[in-house]
Amino acid sequence: EIDNMTMVMSTKEQLNEQATLRAAAAKKRESFADKRGMTGIHQQVKMLDIEVETRTGVICQLQRSLMELEREAKTNTLNANDMNAERFAGMNRVECRFMLQQLFDELITSKLQVENLQQTKKKTDEDAIDEAVEAERARGRAAIKQLKFEHSEAMMTL
Image 1 (cartoon, rainbow, N blue to C red):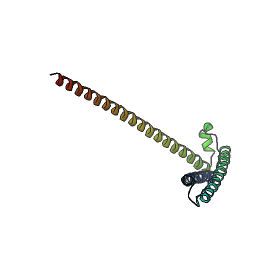
Image 2 (image 1 turned 45 degrees about the vertical axis):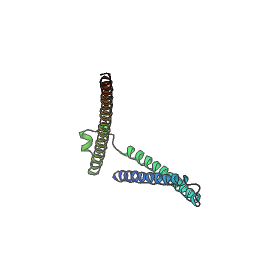
Image 3 (image 1 turned 135 degrees about the vertical axis):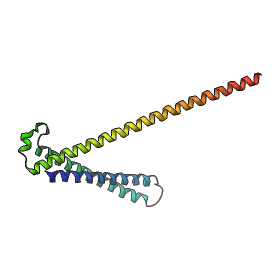
Image 4 (image 1 turned 90 degrees about the vertical axis):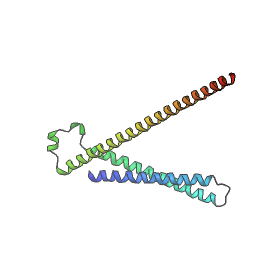
């Protein structure tokens, strides 16, 4: 089971790496596509198209492998809702380590999600505050401008 989780983690890493490489190749292709008039660019665009297609195929295969590994892991793991002291007492050392590793992974994932939500909320709050401050400054500038015009008119009438 631990080997299965290790395979899942490495497959996810490979999947992220291939996605990054595919995005880089697509970006290069777009930059070359913009320079269509230049000689030799057509061949480079074709090569980049092939690279993007190949990386897309690799990503699809890795996703299928990942789904199979996760499906296999789900069928092999114990149901977390049915855990009790008797079940833990019946586990051997490897099963306990695996269960603790899964719980730890879930804890870390949850913590990262909470931190991400907190950062998003903080950024949203800061953006709202900045917008409100800027709007208030604009209203203040408009009021000052209006007062200057009124003052100028009053001085002209004297």
